[in-house]
Structure formats: C-alpha cells, structure tokens
Amino acid sequence: MGKIISIINQKGGVGKTTTAVNLSAYLADKGYKVLLIDTDSQGNATSGLSKKVKFRSDLYEVLLNDEIIENAIVKTDVRKLFLLPASIDLAGAEIEMVSLPRREFLLKEKLQSIKDDYDFILMDCPPSLGLMTLNTLVASEFVLIPIQAEFYALEGLSQLVKTIKSVTRRLNPSLDILGILLTMFDGRTNLSIQVAEEVKRYFGTKLFKTVIPRSIKLSEAPGFGESVLTYAPKSKGAEAYKKLCREVIKRG
Image 1: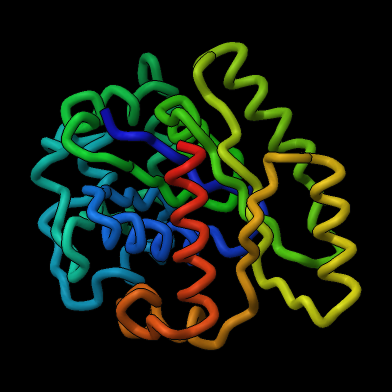
Image 2: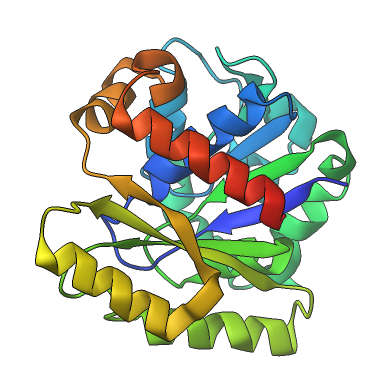
C-alpha cells in the first residue's frame, strides 16, 4: 500500500507546492511509483508539472461528479510520476461538500481503489485549514510541514498542530507528522539560523536535517512545467530535494 503524505501549511508562500512537485519527482527518480494529487484550486502543482498536458478530468470531477479516479490521472514527463490535476472548479468544492454525508471522508474513499497501485501518494494542500485540507488529513498517514526560515515561521503553526491532533483524535488515529521542513533557508544570515534553532527546540527530531535553500532555479522550473530534477539537476535546490527524498524514504 502506498504511503500517503499531505504537504501542508495554512500559510501561503512557504514552499508547499515546490516541495510537493520536487519531492514527488525525486521519489519517482529513485524508482518508486508516485502519484501527486493537486488539491489546491490555484492548480500550481498541476501547471508546475504539466504545461504540455491536456486533461480530460480533474480532482473536482472525481470528488463531486463521480468521475472514475483512474480516468483523471495523467502521466508526467518524469518516469513513474503521475498527476491527479486540479482546476479552478475546486474553488467552489468546499461549499458543495458541506451538505454531503461523510464529507470529511470523500477523498479517502476515492483513493481506496488506487492506493495499492502506488508506492507514494503526495498531496499538495491549499493554504487554508478548510474542508479540502481536512479531507487530505483524513486520507493521509503522514503530514509534511514546510516552514519558511523567517521571523514569523512559527506563527499559526500551533493552530495547524492543534488541527492535526484534532483530526488524529476524531477522524484519523493513524495520522502522524512525518517531519518539519525549513525552506528558503540562507545559512549566511543569523535569522535563518535562529529560526532553525527555534523550530528544532519546538519539534526536536521531527525537524528534517535537510534544509531547502533560496534558489532561482527552484523558482524558474515551474514556469517551464518542470521539476528541478529535469530543469536544473545540478543546482543547489536540486541537491537539497535529492537529500530530502532520502530522508523521507528512511522516515516513511
């Protein structure tokens, strides 16, 4: 059965999508069969992996129009990496989901038929703690939390941890934090070092040893519909996600 990991933080701009796309690519490059699910209506993970791909269907159709999930999954340019895309239709999905029975379990139930087909299923979550994010937490075994190495890194994190604990207690007792990932890290600044120390003090061994540096190549790659694995494989950002991949495999 595939390991299901939600990449989550209710703050925007902390590297969720960058991590989802590049970690997925490196896991696939290691030989694992990987599915990346884009659960954000902005569709950044979708466009970041698939500029050339046209979709017949997407996650919205799977969740709310009974589309067969296998029909919505597409191949990417990375061997063994597959994508369940998002569209702007997801923006209204939460309103439609509110009145449905077992609304928190919609995604989990849809994944039942395919979860054994993949070694890893990663989900890029929207920057909120709404019903869509709740669905990903209920469907997951693990959460990976990217945190930007900045002054307000821990702001709002207590609420996220509280939400995860609530989901674990009420809806998904097997849910656990896989790790905390520092992103946009600049080792030359005292601020980044101080944030790293603070996060380590708060989370201990849950903090990944790997840190993701600020990187122009990481920022450029999505514009070409590629991961950094294919766009700039020798860059610092690529090396960081390669290391993160190894850590995730060990922890998973």
